[in-house]
Image (cartoon, rainbow, N blue to C red):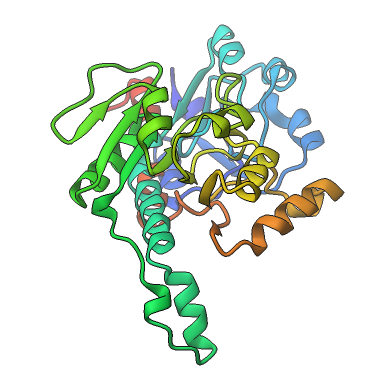
Length: 316
């Protein structure tokens, strides 16, 4: 391959270093943020490399239209918006960089857990209103808790290390990994997590297998009133089942950085009702899909991705 002959279409607000590295290789770079699907269909055949974000769906139709495409690049971890199997069947390499933001996501999950158990949001809001309550805001210490981590990839393992350092008992389950347990982290079944954990934190891609993994059956099988944490993908947790579990006191609360539908303007009447309920709950913390976004992770995701691209181009 001669990268000097390549054209790259960048649809993501990736760190400028990535664009500079592409240009240093002699690759022609066009960055178009917020491109419409119709335009993408028209121009994609001109490009050898495309860098996408989570809002861009690269399906079979686009892959067939991308007659010169050699690489699909996705900063971060999620590849559910790319038909990877079909792309690879067309000899198109699919690259992502979950190593780049795993620490950021793990820290965010842990920060939400700390905030929840120590009543930090509630207490801070009260002080702003001139209310000074100490006894009423007494929290719980994390070293007394058992955390169950579902998905032991880059992010799940990063969280496990940090939770163990705080003295928490750490249980971890991964359907596709074995032999990762050690003195601090107990490798176990999903059933054991549902039985023993005080906190259950999901770190999974969104696939056919993981869609609504936390559904009505999941909540019925819990042996404790847990704190549910989801910083992975909104579709891993079924919103209606989560709301019912909260209403029936089957769980203590939830920390969510992701929602099933994060396009607020597209909500239908049922979604508006669901999310307004969640927003009003004091024992529910919601952040706007920012767990993986830090100044450091934006650079790291780009750095990992460019190195993987260079490796595949056989450039040192």
